[in-house]
Image (cartoon, rainbow, N blue to C red; front, side, top):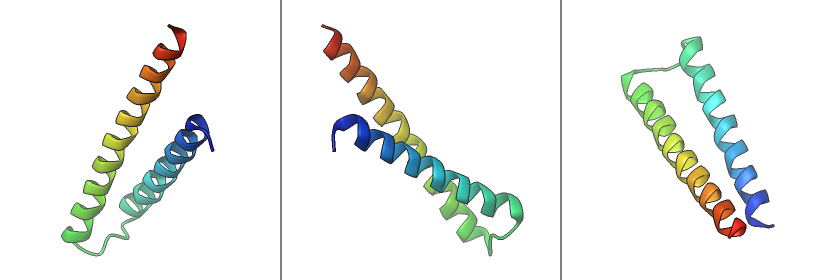
Length: 66
């Protein structure tokens, strides 16, 4: 598996999980405040990883152009 395929897989996994959590949050199926905080923290962590991955990919494209 090359870098692009791996990156696309990770980004899709992040999007899918973020959608699942969003569904939980908007449907009212969160049991308590502790679970809510945990889910929000998970979204924040995934957003950070997604942004870092996009930055790495963008920088890799720039290196390929040189």
